[in-house]
Amino acid sequence: MTRKQKATAVIRALKEEYPDVKCALVYDKPHELLIATRLSAQCTDVRVNMVTPALFERFPTIEAFASAQPSEVEEYIRSCGLFKTKAADIVNMCIMLRDEYGSTVPDSIEELTRLPGVGRKTANLIVGDLYGKPAIVCDTHVIRLTNRLGLADSKDAAKVEKQLAQLLPPEESLNFCHRLVWHGRGVCTARKPDCTSCVLKELCGGNGA
Image (cartoon, rainbow, N blue to C red; front, top):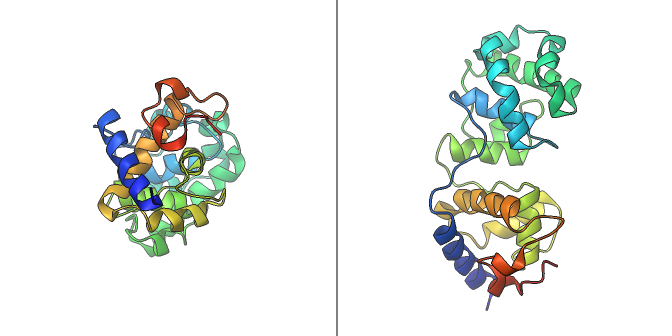
């Protein structure tokens, strides 16, 4: 079986297992997803979703964040880790959104990665979830599982993204990543993969390697 054939089989199996899938981060406005994704670095989505309601109530718009002091934002996001760096990035990205983009979240990876604290993982999630464009979101779950499955052979997110781009139909790529995240959290975990109940066990050998 070639990598492309395996990717097709994995897509099919994950679709059956997780037919309705979406981003785990909760948001109402485009900039809220951008901020929530920044907060999710080295932090669980569950924790981010606990923090953001109060944060977005206090700072309801891009302009409100842009006018804030990082120290004000810090008080709401302390439990997310790296809170000083994240607070500064959030304020500075909103200043840039206000001043250069008319308070609109850009729809291209090139423009998004100009924003403070925004890398390709975040940019891909934004263009995929907000704008419906093909996107490959290489978070830790996607990198771990695609390596286990033999669809990728690198721990570097940029390299994995390029490898997957050669294998995935563009219209399937975003939900493929979302499904891998759900699968990585619930079944194929980092510490103790549950291979016996994994729908992909026949495709990766079922050894959790």
